[in-house]
Image (cartoon, rainbow, N blue to C red; front, side, top):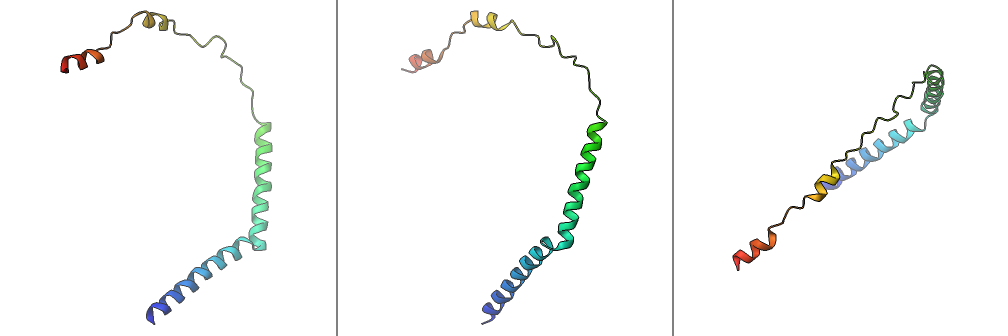
Length: 89
Protein backbone atom coordinates (compact mmCIF):
# COMPACT_ATOMS: atom_id res chain seq x y z
CA UNK A 1 0.00 0.00 0.00
CA UNK A 2 2.83 2.38 0.89
CA UNK A 3 4.55 1.52 -2.39
CA UNK A 4 1.44 2.48 -4.37
CA UNK A 5 1.19 5.82 -2.57
CA UNK A 6 4.87 6.50 -3.28
CA UNK A 7 4.44 5.66 -6.98
CA UNK A 8 1.32 7.81 -7.18
CA UNK A 9 3.06 10.85 -5.62
CA UNK A 10 6.03 10.32 -7.89
CA UNK A 11 3.71 10.21 -10.90
CA UNK A 12 1.99 13.42 -9.74
CA UNK A 13 5.35 15.19 -9.36
CA UNK A 14 6.49 14.11 -12.83
CA UNK A 15 3.23 15.19 -14.46
CA UNK A 16 3.30 18.52 -12.59
CA UNK A 17 6.88 19.08 -13.71
CA UNK A 18 6.06 18.53 -17.38
CA UNK A 19 2.89 20.61 -17.09
CA UNK A 20 4.82 23.56 -15.63
CA UNK A 21 7.52 23.28 -18.29
CA UNK A 22 5.01 23.26 -21.16
CA UNK A 23 2.93 25.98 -19.54
CA UNK A 24 5.95 28.28 -19.28
CA UNK A 25 7.25 27.42 -22.74
CA UNK A 26 3.94 28.17 -24.47
CA UNK A 27 3.05 31.23 -22.38
CA UNK A 28 2.52 34.52 -24.21
CA UNK A 29 5.21 36.25 -22.16
CA UNK A 30 7.84 33.69 -23.15
CA UNK A 31 6.82 33.73 -26.83
CA UNK A 32 7.00 37.53 -26.87
CA UNK A 33 10.46 37.49 -25.27
CA UNK A 34 11.74 34.92 -27.76
CA UNK A 35 10.51 36.98 -30.71
CA UNK A 36 12.10 40.15 -29.26
CA UNK A 37 15.40 38.33 -28.84
CA UNK A 38 15.26 37.10 -32.43
CA UNK A 39 14.54 40.58 -33.74
CA UNK A 40 17.34 42.02 -31.64
CA UNK A 41 19.71 39.36 -32.93
CA UNK A 42 18.85 40.22 -36.53
CA UNK A 43 19.52 43.90 -35.86
CA UNK A 44 22.87 43.13 -34.26
CA UNK A 45 23.85 41.02 -37.26
CA UNK A 46 22.86 43.77 -39.70
CA UNK A 47 24.91 46.40 -37.87
CA UNK A 48 27.92 44.12 -37.53
CA UNK A 49 27.79 43.29 -41.25
CA UNK A 50 27.99 46.98 -42.09
CA UNK A 51 31.07 47.47 -39.93
CA UNK A 52 33.07 44.60 -41.42
CA UNK A 53 36.23 45.52 -43.27
CA UNK A 54 37.58 43.60 -46.22
CA UNK A 55 41.05 42.16 -45.95
CA UNK A 56 43.56 42.03 -48.77
CA UNK A 57 44.18 38.55 -50.15
CA UNK A 58 47.78 37.67 -49.35
CA UNK A 59 47.66 33.91 -49.90
CA UNK A 60 49.11 33.79 -53.40
CA UNK A 61 51.93 31.26 -53.86
CA UNK A 62 51.92 30.24 -50.22
CA UNK A 63 51.81 26.46 -50.67
CA UNK A 64 55.24 24.85 -51.05
CA UNK A 65 55.00 21.31 -52.31
CA UNK A 66 57.36 18.76 -50.83
CA UNK A 67 59.46 17.14 -53.52
CA UNK A 68 60.98 14.62 -51.10
CA UNK A 69 58.30 12.03 -51.79
CA UNK A 70 60.05 10.76 -54.90
CA UNK A 71 63.26 10.17 -52.96
CA UNK A 72 61.52 7.95 -50.42
CA UNK A 73 59.88 5.87 -53.12
CA UNK A 74 63.25 4.94 -54.60
CA UNK A 75 64.49 3.43 -51.33
CA UNK A 76 62.58 0.23 -50.67
CA UNK A 77 63.07 -1.30 -47.28
CA UNK A 78 63.24 -5.06 -47.26
CA UNK A 79 60.61 -6.54 -44.97
CA UNK A 80 61.76 -9.34 -42.69
CA UNK A 81 58.38 -10.84 -41.85
CA UNK A 82 58.72 -13.94 -44.02
CA UNK A 83 62.27 -14.52 -42.78
CA UNK A 84 61.00 -14.59 -39.18
CA UNK A 85 58.62 -17.40 -40.11
CA UNK A 86 61.40 -19.37 -41.82
CA UNK A 87 63.61 -19.18 -38.74
CA UNK A 88 60.90 -20.63 -36.49
CA UNK A 89 60.30 -23.63 -38.72
